[in-house]
Image (tube, rainbow, N blue to C red; front, side, top):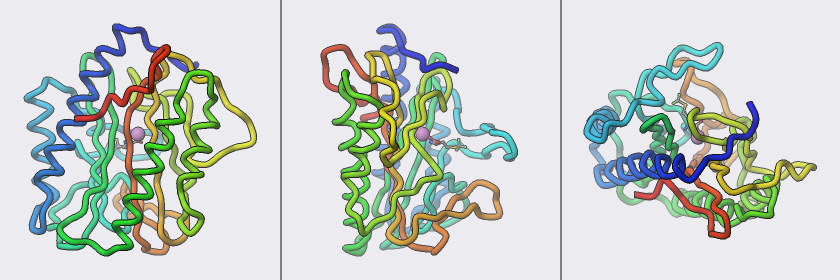
Length: 254
Ligand code: MF3
Ligand code: CO
């Protein structure tokens, strides 16, 4: 599939899809406290999708070789990085949890993730969250017209201090009618500039940062990805559109 540029009318719909995702994530952020069960977050998401007429994007998603993803939200705790399946687990003070959400509205997908602190967290966890969210925003700032894809990857990489590890197995991606479209957006620079960024291009940027080794492993549930060494990790994601003569527009804000 080539890179799909969206028309103004399509961007209008993507704005609505993005807002549903952003507002639902903001609702989850409000709910998070020591004692919250991950299943309550999943139930909240399912209810919000119904309320807004959004179609479930993650549930049933089945890339080659995997069982269908069983839930509407990914909830990944501490050393879990991405694709955690919400289960009967109570959050505890000091945990950090990534909630990753995709919704389809009128045929278009919004995709976003936040990492949230449960009560008081360690200074190391707090700094990791600041670094990862900062890298996401550095990538967003680099999404101007006239730049190339590699400039975005490089901006993300350069925002992450050398003592942290950037995960290489997972990348950002184009997003539109499909959750995963061309191009892939690595969180580190490559040796070629990549395609030019044009108005109508919509990307999901999603830096993933580990405190320890960059390596990850998949757990026995075939979905949950954790750091190989059990170190703390973090993930933030937004869906962003490039607009002619304007700043990049983040579609998944609340
Ligand atoms: N938000 C994730 C991504 O961008 C998708 C989650 S995978 C799913 O790749 F199975 F949960 F859908
Ligand atoms: Co994504």
